[in-house]
Image 1 (cartoon, rainbow, N blue to C red):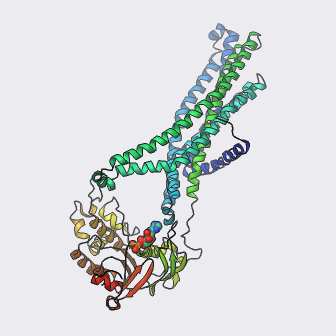
Image 2: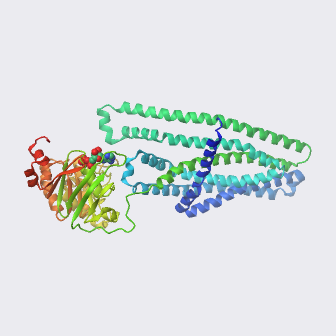
Image 3: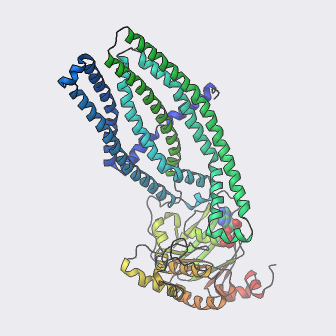
Length: 608
Ligand code: ADP
């Protein structure tokens, strides 16, 4: 590797050192996850560090006893105490090694699960707006795919460092008793390796950052090729080869980058290793000269030999542990970055409680809103009143802003101008969680939970007492027109929906929609938002469903986004949106009389 210019190297070194800041945070995580296991782990590591040094001295005792007393030592049994002590220490080391593996696993599993828990907690609570940014997915990918294992590895590195450090310092002391410069020489021999290891760790990390997007691209293609959602289209359009080639091309790029880095590292490591070999050769030459001069005993010889070779291997492992520790802390900076993501959509410091049932209704006042990263306003100078206790139908072309309106009522986003009011209070002043608990939604593309039918419905209101769930789910399913279809499933309400798990049954789009509708009804909320609830229904089914819906919606504030005029006409109030603005509103009769966009849609005339 070519040496870096000064400032760049300084910058890297500063960055390198600053990454070690994360160590205490990882230890804090380990402590939170498993305080007792962490204490045990530390105790074992310290013992493991001290025992090899004790073994060195016991070896010298044994060798010197044998050398001094010769065969008389065997007869007199004087060799027994050092021999027994050495055997005991070596036995204890073995025992500890086995024991520490078990402790490490127990602690590592707890830590990994704790970190996954933190990631999940953050992932389910960040603003929906985050999901609009590719950078968020990069971060999420880095945090969730690497962090749990990296934190465990980092703890192992720290343990290895601590253990190796204790041994190393003690060995350096032993070496210093032979020549003061020996420990220094050993340290100097390790420096090139330290540099190489740091450079390598940093380069690996930078490569990882650089290739996260490519890795996600590969993962995406893999997912498309293996997902049930895409399976039919992949076959029909014959997309398999195209996706496979794209996947292989990305993998080839990633492989090439990795191999280039590994090649450079191998050369640098070779150069660093040569220095260390020279030092070892010199030390052995010195040892033999002194022994030939009669300056050292045979015990000294054994101790020196062991201490030196062991110090070298401990130094090597220390260097590599430090490198790995550094690399793992670099990875973990992504975890802490992810965990530090802040939500903008939050409950204010002194929130107002939302009303249990609305008295006035929901009002949009001159609302301007655009999606994160978008230049176009999805709602523009938008004003609308949704009366409490009534059903308001929202009509409009694709992209008019209908779904956006529902998302703003849920407060998934805040408008950049104007305000949304609930019974006259700005939505931003209300307790967010409490407000959302007053709202039930059927999204345009409801989620298909791979779970029992009853659970698919009960997810609408988790706090329902267990004994009441099934009867309430049946009632909600009746209201949504899903009861019959669930009863006909093998296993009825306990039938597993979706095919991801063994024994599951797949539903049609319309059937899934009705299950989702049942979930919305199960919530039993005063505000009901439905985004194209009848889009997957037959017209004759729709009529029966609408009758049930209006009975269910009685007394609730309902907003019904729809493309179907036959659905809209039954609402108390109809609003027509166009390009993020309200262009018409009134009852069915009033709008027909106006002869505007709504009336034209009924008569089948084009817009004009
Ligand atoms: P509708 O429900 O009336 O079909 P939407 O409310 O979904 O329309 O969308 C309104 C506008 O906002 C459209 O121009 C659409 O392209 C845009 N839009 C919708 N969702 C997003 C998003 N997540 N990011 C950026 N633009 C979006």
